[in-house]
Length: 96
Image (cartoon, rainbow, N blue to C red; front, side):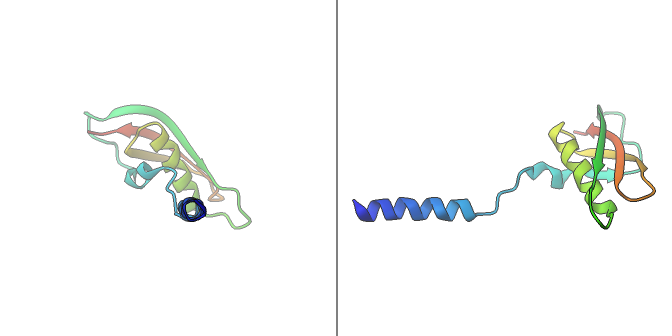
């Protein structure tokens, strides 16, 4: 019984240390300045922000991709970016 409890506890410990991806779909979201094809469905506006000592546009874009993936999008037309590289916005689309 003691061996079983050690085995169970060690498996829980191992699983808790495993890397977990919160939004696996955000890697599949394409960012572009070009309009998508006509068959794509408009899912609405998305925004991305970064709060950091050193502003980074890539972090803001990643944040926008996460929001787009929450909506089920796989394509985002990036429309605006702040002058300080801390915010971006665009329109999310689902393209079959």
